[in-house]
Image 1 (cartoon, helix red, strand yellow):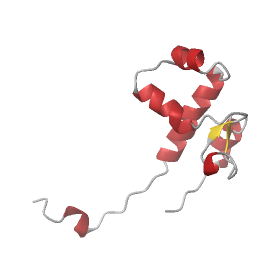
Image 2 (cartoon, helix red, strand yellow):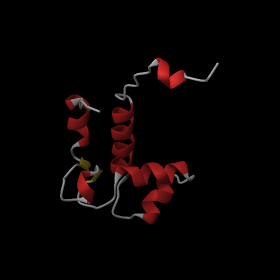
Image 3 (cartoon, rainbow, N blue to C red):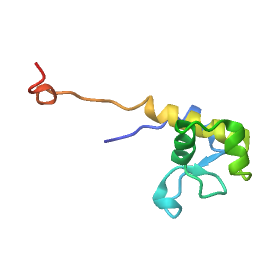
Image 4 (cartoon, rainbow, N blue to C red):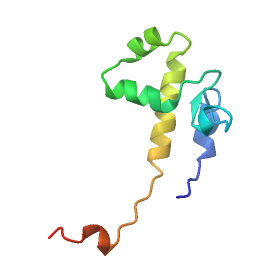
Length: 92
């Protein structure tokens, strides 16, 4: 699957999010850490608040946490799904 990055949005997030193939196999992380964006999403999914995330990971800032959410929203907003009749086989 091909992904296209909106440089206008990412430019603002470059201060906080980085992708480096030598850090966590290229997963997006908070710059200067090995904390992946997916970890922050997982923490929110399990009921953490920004305050609780900052307490658990004092190296993070509120802006970095928000940048992780914005990054994830931008990436998910660009996903495309292509359905074929085979996707709906047997769903009558």
